[in-house]
Amino acid sequence: MATLLAQRKHWIISMTVVCLVLGGLLGVQVHTQQVRGLTEVGRQTGALISRLTEAEAQLDKQQEEIERLRGLQAEYEQEAASEKGLVRLMTEELGNARIALGLLPVKGPGVVLELADSTMMAGGEFGGQDVYVIHDFDLVQIANELWAAGAEAISINGQRLVSGSAITCSARLIKVNDVTISGPFTLKVIGNKKNLMSALNIRDGALDRLRVLQFQVKLMPEDEIVVPPISVGSRYEYAQPLQKEEKQ
Amino acid sequence: MIALPLSALIVGFLAVYLFLPAVPPRWADYVAIAILAGLDALVGALRNWLERRFDEAIFVSGFFANMVLAALLAYFGDKLGVDLYLAVVVALGIRIFNNLGRTRALFVTARVEARRARTAAAQ
Image (cartoon, rainbow over all chains, first blue to last red; front, side):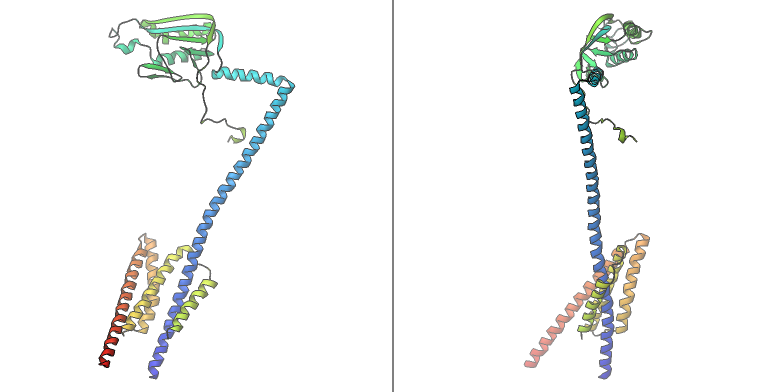
């Protein structure tokens, strides 16, 4: 009986030790899991805080910019009120910018070029119909040569060519500034008459090639040409002016 | 009789939980494996005791050795890029479940036999 009791006691002691160890391990694990959960929440909070600070910094910057622009506006208004030279200068500057953008009709000396399809019959000695009609690339080449010769304003059938103008071909028609035009084409060009004439009449130039194929080309210098403004103003959705402090 | 091991369990838990710092998170998996191995040993001991073939030396050595081995296996699995951790969890889980089922069956048989003995005595 005594040995049985002793044995049983021994058993309980070892069981107690085992349970102590197991309890300790459970404690470690529960503690660790809790800490882990806390740090994950902490990490998320940290990310949110950094984003908030960033946004706040941006807001501050923008408010500064607003202040600066308001100051500038006030300055301009003051200048306008006191009718100093600045207004005149700025109006001039604005006028130049508007001409460059094609927002104003302009007049001046230059040349008028009239182009029509070839009088030769399709399927003639040079090939099919494609050869005898004016293509978008013909106009592009002519416009390029005109710009190179110092043209200041060009219009094709009333469509003003500006810096963003595209001359494209769409289903046998030609589009300028996304507006469909068809022949005969009239180009009005303002610039130095002599330079423009010689640029167009250059040997093996665009007009030379067209004349060989008997296109109807009529080029005449004029003393006063009016070039119309662009019908659709350009919008800048993506391009932003680079501020000085942003330059890297 | 059962009070001493049970209180030891609670004391061990509280002592570590309250007074010791948490282990690094990458150790948590190994601790979990060790706990599973310990539980397996405990449940196995219960079953063996009910089957009257409980051996104290086997129990204690099995408890500690299985804990260490299970954690080591998971660790080597990590080093080799094989998820031995999962293998250990599945194996131990099945063993614990089987042993608990056996234990329940033994309890039920014991009670049924006791009732039968009582009714037999009454007749």
